[in-house]
Image (cartoon, rainbow, N blue to C red; front, side, top):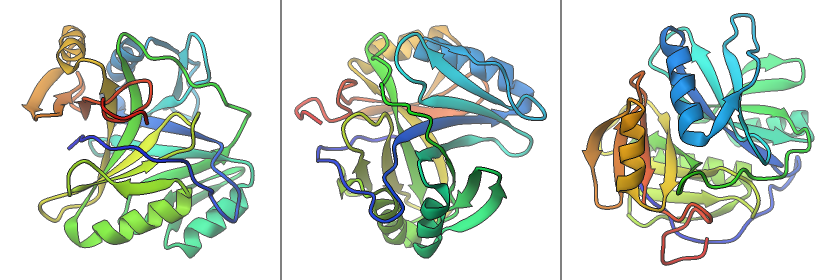
Amino acid sequence: MGGVGGNGSGGDAGPGGAIRWTYAFVDRPMAGFERACAFWTAVTATELSEPRGDLGEFVTLLPETGDACVKAQGVLSGAGGAHLDFAVEDIPAFVDRAVRLGAEVVAPHDGWAVLRSPAGQLFCAVPWHGESVRPPVVDGSRLDQVCLDVAPAAFEDEVAFWAALSGWDSHPGSLPEFHVLRPPTGLPVRILLQRLDTPRPTSAHLDLACTDIATTRTHHESLGATVVSHHPHWTVMRDPTGGTYCLTGRAPETGGLPSTTS
């Protein structure tokens, strides 16, 4: 899991309007939600907003400068994971386009919607409130990527879906099992699709771009994270509540490999 991508250029979202901002969601079980929020605010140098929702299950991670691009949700069942929120100006048009491309509306709400991709990954369409300034790199790392882990049989169709929905630059990653969707300059969260070796339900996890993986790993371990596995260009970690994520050897300023500019 995790992985690294390459470079490219932005794209046009097509009918229904462009994606104006993106949020990476940290989804963790309610039983450990407070502890998860403490960890993720520490590694992103953010503060928690006031909780929202009937159970206080939604919070935004507020950076000292720039606009927020990470939120967290306490889930009542399952182990959690990650998902994306797309902030758009015309939600009905975006939802209609997603459905035409193969998505399913899971929960329509007043002013926003929860959808499911063809392979089963949840995502949300939410209003754009003018967010435009990306938060800075924090201590040599930046949470900047949501990785979708997709079964082999669904991978090609899922790549086609997310590429068409986003309109972002779409290209193969650094390894055959990866595909990168790079947003236009200024948007804070990339999408990486990873083809799994064996069939299992689609899931998602968070990736951080790190100037030095070992330094970031040590910092995260001091906050309660543990190492799951090491790979040549990324390290799989587990946060204090059991959620997995990856530290990747990409340039935090650009999201690209160190030898590239984007």
